[in-house]
Amino acid sequence: MDEKLARQVEELKKAMGEDPRFQELNEADSLLRKDPEALSLEGEKEKAEEAFNEALRHYGEKSSEAVEARKALYRAKLALDECPAAKRYYAAYVPVRDLLAQIDDMLFGEFREKRGC
Image (tube, rainbow, N blue to C red; front, side, top):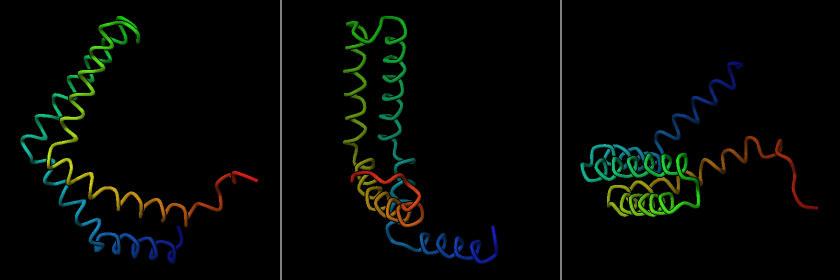
């Protein structure tokens, strides 16, 4: 990487660190990782995910065991998504995701395969 490009990347990194959207996301992430309710719900979701994968391996996708495990996984994921700390994180994530998509498009858009006409 040449010196000019390295300097520009550092400037972008600094600007992103100073952007309130990234700061809010970092704060929300920190709170989410420390929230006892979110941690407990994440553990439940992981257990449900393991049970679902196990049911798929042993019984197949259409088995009653897999269907019940899928429902349990859905409920566990929904409970995590509805946790206040997770809601704050998701709300902070969306604007950052959109900004990163714009940056990605500016940097690499012309190299992507064109669709349409």
